[in-house]
Image (cartoon, rainbow, N blue to C red; front, top):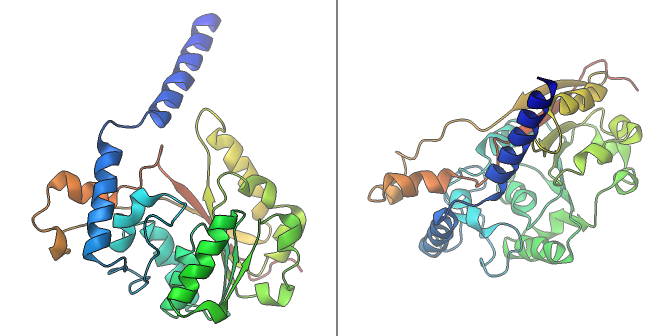
Length: 272
């Protein structure tokens, strides 16, 4: 029985790995086509959501996932995250820190719509750094944005602690979040609203391991998990004559499993 149980466990991990890595035939091609079509229709400008009006870089220039362009243009991409950032901006100190800024959609988007007054963007890719600067210049907010290199404990600790009090930070660094959050960084961020995208696959890291890691924040933060919610495309006149499958592919983020984010909000009695 023990051997059978072990074999079943191995089989489950293999199936999960295959399911998360084998692309659906034709789906990505259609998502790419929809992204290019609506990028042309919308003149590369976000039309809906909290970043509406942001003029994006040409698809040929971006280095991050261009398949999400249609969802971004319609304001559907990571909508739960942008909604939270919008709410937090109303009580922030005007500073937004984007850790893992990719091509700069968040970093520049929050400035374009005046959600924040100043942004510090960390991005390890040199092409990403150039794209962030180009996007900021294209949208006339380059004077409010500072682009830095890779984020790690040392680079974060160089930020003035006074800036962090009341700031909002978004962390999306493809699994490096687990090593980034050292005791010293947690102490620095104790007065900051922090949103972390959690990267884990069932075959790599169990949910129990993630929950154990999260416990380190409970002394200084209220801890809340959230995930993707429902989408409704009925209000978009531009999609009126598109097939059901196309409308939902625009909402798709092409993820290997259901995403999960962590919101750390400072406790009023957070340790000094």
